[in-house]
Image (cartoon, helix red, strand yellow):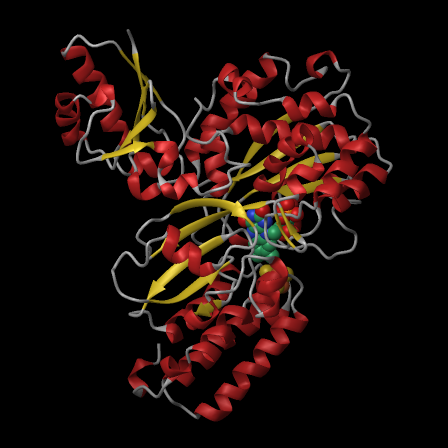
Length: 517
Ligand SMILES: Cc1cc2nc3c(=O)[nH]c(=O)nc-3n(C[C@H](O)[C@H](O)[C@H](O)COP(=O)(O)O)c2cc1C
Ligand code: SF4
């Protein structure tokens, strides 16, 4: 009888040696005359255990990790194909507390299925949302998304249904669905996991968005740093088209939707929606003035839905299970679940999908297990490079868009980067300002000039040169950037800068003048 063994083909797992592990398992099985079928799945998102090898047993899928190439012989000798005990064994993967306590909606299939296998996708609930959508009117689909309370997961948390409604109501000979897969925020990887672990989910979500708004063409704008995701997704598009899930007549429904993927060249600002559209059109990625909104005049001047990967990938389940089912997760105006990404100095980094409302502390300690270095966690940055640095006193803040806004922070794309007590927060403030200076698209003065002057002012404060005046100048500069920038890159950079200054003032204490950079 054949035994099925899963070895992830996910960028992180591969970086940890998964390819060599898969090869060694195949070689050992052959040498021992054992019938083993190795399936390359996506990652479950328990990254500290990668490569996490799973063996199908009558009791469930038993996990071993992190497995090295050298450990493979020992695993065979211990009888891992029967789920036997071993120093690397973790029992049934679904029962590992990190996973068992999550509420996986968007990531329900990640690590479980063979990502490109259409039958596996359908056997695990795939296409149900699309099959329901083709039975509904566009207005009814949009109403479902509105009622679900789904807000954009790319950063701004704008209600997805409102955007879709605007595009549906716009009159045009062509409309577009654009998926923002630039995923530029520090410590984030959930978009990538969708591409590498459950790509048909995104195809399904985009197709539903097309049917709902009258858009017949979709583009995915993917960052070039994700070559594996690119290859897998292109293959997924081919297979979905061949099976009739996209194309001129989706499963005989009369609806048409085509899909292409484009690679960005790697600029943070190209994640901002209007720069992204410029870049997709083949121009330099620079921010457009708004209005007009992309929903009315977007890609090639046509009405365009632009949504993040996770937003679009959340839609199939909303259609399949109903808006209320989705809405039942979460708190206040933050409905559904958020795939949170734990990164930086953290013992158990990975993906935690939970309904909104759990606290940062639960994430950092119950899931993350504290810092990887074993030192106290001093600060976390949530929401990417434009997010505030939060001190321990704010770790009880619930993950909820409004609760974060109330402490001048943002949830963003759900990335959390952890720092222990060896961090120099003045250096982090400088880094945030310098990041803005480097990544600025240059269109508006507060950001283009302000960020460069900001780095100089922070350097003077750190060098104790005329501290009081320079501190006042920094605050005034941040005020100008917040209120005068054309987009959120310049507008939000004061968040990390001032949060570092306000919460970690001791790190800005006098230093010798030679530290000026
Ligand atoms: C500087 C900057 C970078 C951004 N980067 C991303 C990104 O990498 N991915 C993303 O989905 N949204 C990003 N956004 C947000 C987008 O502008 C936009 O709000 C989002 O694509 C809308 O989709 P959503 O409503 O589904 O979140 C960025 C915004 C700014 C200002
Ligand atoms: S804030 Fe910065 S990135 Fe945004 S438009 Fe102005 S110069 Fe460009």
